[in-house]
Amino acid sequence: MKILWETSPRNPDSNWHILQAATLTVDPANYWPGFEMADSTCPNGIVGFRLVVDSVTNEVLYYDPGI
Image (cartoon, rainbow, N blue to C red; front, side, top):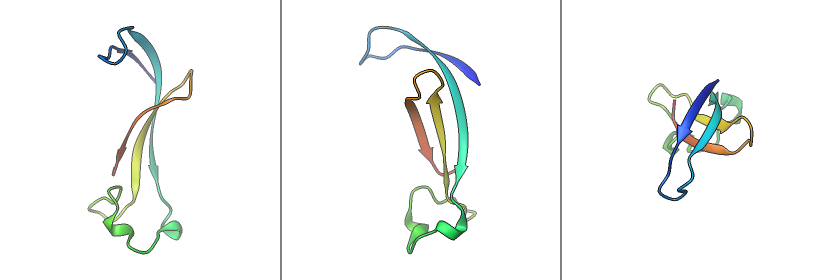
């Protein structure tokens, strides 16, 4: 868990966020035809993404495809 101080041009108010980060992978049993073209497919063939959530509001703050 991490605490982040955030300012944004979109929101002039500054905010504290208590963050929870996760690295999530897709089980190969759930791959779909053409999955290798997805932006979440890594060079090693694993499909997944990183997700960061505000632990208080459950708002998804950002995610990155690929791991």
